[in-house]
Image 1 (cartoon, each protein chain N blue to C red):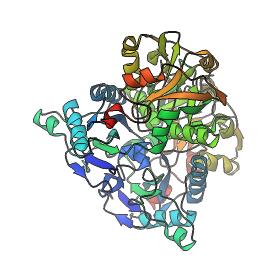
Image 2 (image 1 turned 60 degrees about the vertical axis):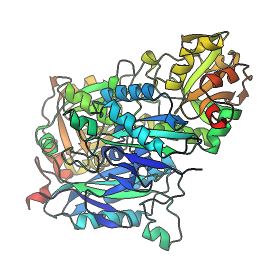
Image 3 (image 1 turned 60 degrees about the horizontal axis):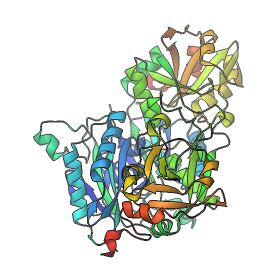
Image 4 (image 1 turned 45 degrees about the vertical axis):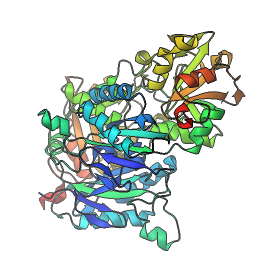
Length: 308
Length: 308
């Protein structure tokens, strides 16, 4: 199995243990930056355009000078070129605000395309990594996840009118997301489902909630709630018709998920993981899981492409 | 004026532009780590013990294997030894969860004391920086700050029973704090005062709220609200008697600050900054600012010690 790969914008692939960030990089000092995670299959990041579009939206919300999409796409291609095409992987694309003060350029290089276009890419630090997909991820795809609900503290509409709270932004400030998953693990669950202060299911720390109500494939509306717009959930809903379903966005109480015709957590690398149990109560297996996995190009244990 | 200094635990002082963090350091990938900021005066970090105690509390909340306090104190002494004793500075002490996976040790070295004590310090990355105090900081101390109130989204008691939301933890995930300050700046203010969803004043993104009600020097209670326990605010309240005041913790509505006998934002490097205006309404100058500054060892424009 291949080890982690690292590529830095303007430098290309570097040994994975190379220190690339200065002590005064705002990405580490302040979690001030953005990222995307993609599934690598057949040596390519899947849904690259969708992820780059979301990254650009995050950058606008953070007032961050993102290099041109062409440079970012080239960086992902560059790192994937060194990854075995027969092995699936998880690709992270990271852009920090760069070193504090901004006048020093640090180890982040100006993007080639930006330079040729005469555009300043600012002082950002941009890198990509590809790493193997872990055992727990493969198991969750196959067997589903036991999920614990817990409050996110916000009312469902709290972030809508408060852009400084960064609803919908995939920032590097994931300490609460990680603490939530640790808390779930410490309480015997595989993942957490965040619930709004007023009792609505929102999303999980690193995945979206998708459920089936009859033949309606549903997810939580993004704008109103400030959750992250899930690229994987979006792809599923956009292709619902292909598996005989319609798509809808609506609010749901966690207690109503038990009566749904299926409930899943969706994300780029894990794909679609059935919610096996919610707060200790088993949820029924859905007959639709296999079809939805196929929409995402995953089999139960691995991506379809990896079996060829 | 001296430039930024950087020291890494186990390595000592390195050139400030040295890359020290790998691409897979969870400090940057997830904002997963903790920090403290201290004021450097007379070549020493001020209130070091208090800051180390808060760092240890943050580490426990994040399940993070912090090196022994003696090693951290030694690191701060080491970096301060290279800083001119006549110049004030801002010291940051940072501890990340280290590289993802944890088995690789990366550039973070085991702490010397941990090694000698046979204690594993885990995989954490620890470093300290000292940097010059900026013009804006000195101006805020002298002239005060215009502050805009904005919602933090949480009800005042939302984080008390939800430890995964990391209330009271000084984590590296400060993207919302930074976005809040950018939002304030874009709206003509110097800083933001976060207000709970139920209308109580909480804290500012990088400072505590302190106000005077008659002869009671007040700040917001920490436990109930999940705000950060401010070392500077605590020091002021603990020494209130020295300037003829009593100390209290209570809740206040932002609208009631105009009737207070003084309102300030307190933090380690800026010290005590009078709130000059709140949402565009000027607040009266307090006669007590000079005395409180003296308690913290600052004059209006610079620390007392720097004038010797």
